[in-house]
Image 1 (tube, rainbow, N blue to C red):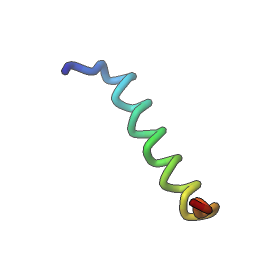
Image 2 (image 1 turned 90 degrees about the vertical axis):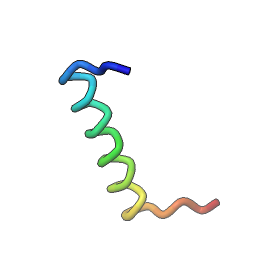
Image 3 (image 1 turned 45 degrees about the horizontal axis):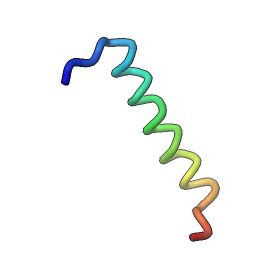
Image 4 (image 1 turned 120 degrees about the vertical axis):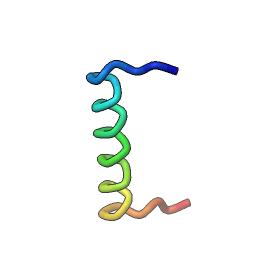
Length: 29
């Protein structure tokens, strides 16, 4: 699948944001 640079950056950003929030707020489940 081909991703544009903007889409790729957005996915990377969301992934980093999710892992960052995961460290601060560990999932209860």
